[in-house]
Image 1 (cartoon, rainbow, N blue to C red):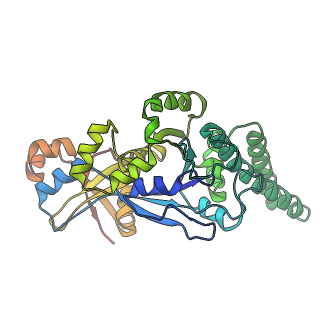
Image 2 (cartoon, rainbow, N blue to C red):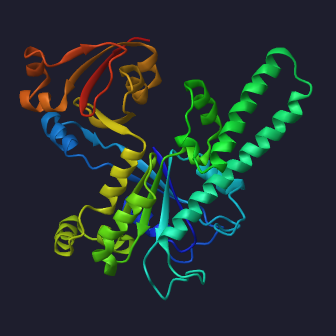
Image 3 (cartoon, one colour):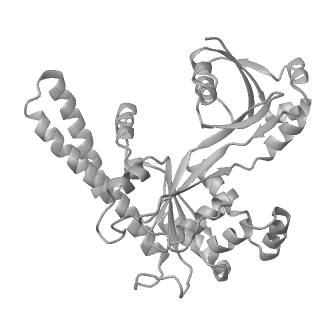
Length: 365
């Protein structure tokens, strides 16, 4: 999964990126001409460590989340200039968006002359996403009008159906309803996905606070939950600079510092957890002497889709899946014991994968 981090200038996007990926991207002088920072966060999972101890594989492979720290839009954001061009393309390709909003006070970091107001900036960014989608909808409606003049029969009917859908989406957006919250049929949702609308994507709003604001964290979260959080919009506070600094030290020392400061879970853990929740992802495992590996699928996916995450040939030639839950496998101590106790099951194509399943796929191509 790919998560794009966006925000107004000086919101601390790159600081959050570094905290989430344990990266060391330059946080100062990040110009609009710069390339995006791309980092991969390995998903922490104690279950993977336990399985590795059980199987003793040649390697252990974590699930991963890719974070993309986008440079500032060439024309700026929050200045009614919109999102377009290459910047729009980069955002559209992401599976979910992180909106970074500045709450920290720092005289050395410009605030645009309007002071620091995280909630004002969040509202601005959400409007920018909506405006970008409205422009796409307007252009599509104009194109349909032009093409419809010479269309006949089935082509004309298809255009009229699309026009009805686009007009409904536009009306909803203008009324304040992002596309992700609008009621769509399965076919309409498939069509909408082709456009990669920004307001159709899950959003994670992260208020980037200063260490001196730790006592305000609960109040900030309460306001986020009441004013910002909705279906498809998750919220969190993050002490970006502190988290970035803690991520740069030895893990054992980090744990001690974190405990003494009352800093809670790490920035990496929090951003990964939020990413999983935003995209409704779960983890399954494949285990063997060569590799013990964690994989992600969307909650509700069947065994064939899970097999396809590993290789398309597995999905195409799927025969069956041998499945045991993580808890049962650990209790039994081995696959052979799990099989003898009857807790390792033979499942078909329609089996719904559950979080923590350990799966061996049988296939033939």
